[in-house]
Length: 329
Image (cartoon, rainbow, N blue to C red; front, top):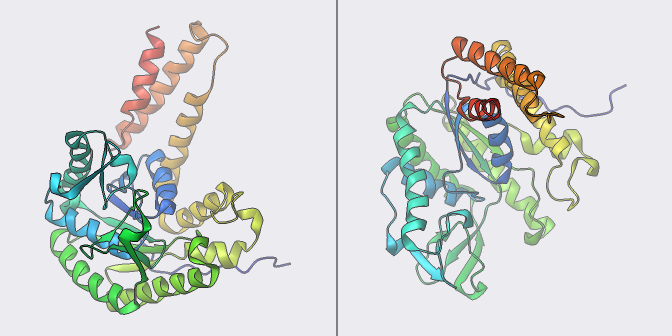
């Protein structure tokens, strides 16, 4: 008996390996997938500008990563003793100009330096609604709780997204010639826009991505995370308590579908080994100083060293530090 309507995944999805360099940009859904990639020890940078919801903000971030032009004091504004950037998430804000710029430019420079070696760029669009500063016309990524009167709200047109990204994709091809772009649309519903407006917004994103993938079939591909939640899962038990965000179960399911299509058998084996190490380190012993616990930690260190011998690019520095700290107690 068939109780679901499975979404057929594109046949041209890439095979992503641990030796590849990845960059993820976009909504909090990108954060969920990015955190799973990082836990699985993929070499990936996740949202160096913080969470970005609309295509214009992602476009602006990518343009800045390509040029590497640092942010200056002129790009900040101060509110209640804190310095903010309209292009960045609140996690980059600080109580001094110097600290805010340090947080912003460190991440920017890292992303810029890694760009030539980038193999995969994963972009998640959340909404086509944008906010612009009335005074300058600048698209903002984060309003930072400023008065609504400062901003104008409108929905991007499909043509606007396509036109801007055509130039960006061609520019990216020059800077990162081996990079393939994987687009996806966040299944998170933006209820503040209104449910009908949210549907129009998602449709705009889907149409724009489809046009770009048709225009650049060798460089771009679409992963249907939105459709998997809306059509395949199609049940409120796959949503969090707010009924807007996918639940952890839904994200696990999308991660599984993504992995089954984009990970080889070897890559899945590495992921499983990383999960086993993480699970072992999360184990809380009855007696940290016992010989039994020290032997347990030594076995973890041995597993990590064996894995790194086969795959030197895997980064287990943090895990090794934890083991050695506990062993030296």
